[in-house]
Length: 153
Ligand SMILES: Cc1cc2nc3c(=O)[nH]c(=O)nc-3n(C[C@H](O)[C@H](O)[C@H](O)COP(=O)(O)O)c2cc1C
Image (cartoon, protein in one colour):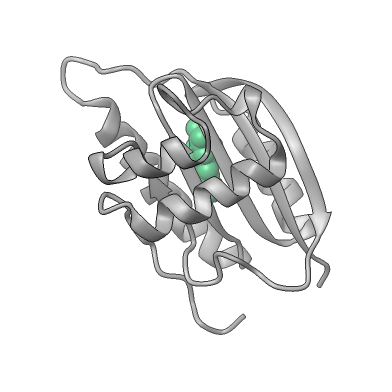
């Protein structure tokens, strides 16, 4: 297995509908993801706000490439920009098939630390700063939902 990490961002097309809040719809994306990611040994994190998604996928490079291609056809987002896809020696998100974070009050201090004045805008961030930001956010964000991964890999 060739362990790799892929990072992209995209335009969030999920909007509130009469029957479902945007947050609920994003939660359902993650529910869909968790089974598939567990089966394929993929871990990672998803960050979102009203405008963007940013996602980190870790796992075998073939598995994450296939999953990325699959995700890229999903109409719930568009304008996907691949920031990086590199070999890694270990996973950062080993414990989560997909951790996710929206914006919360507890995250405000971090937004300031990363020079984000209003809301995060991945178009203005590098792959490295986006990864560091997601890592910090996931550590402190009380709204983070953790989808546990199998502890085998
Ligand atoms: C922003 C975003 C991130 C997603 N991340 C994943 C993921 O990590 N793994 C996954 O299996 N599906 C992910 N999905 C959902 C897939 O695009 C797809 O809807 C889901 O895997 C079900 O596919 P199927 O209908 O072909 O079974 C994501 C969708 C979006 C919009």
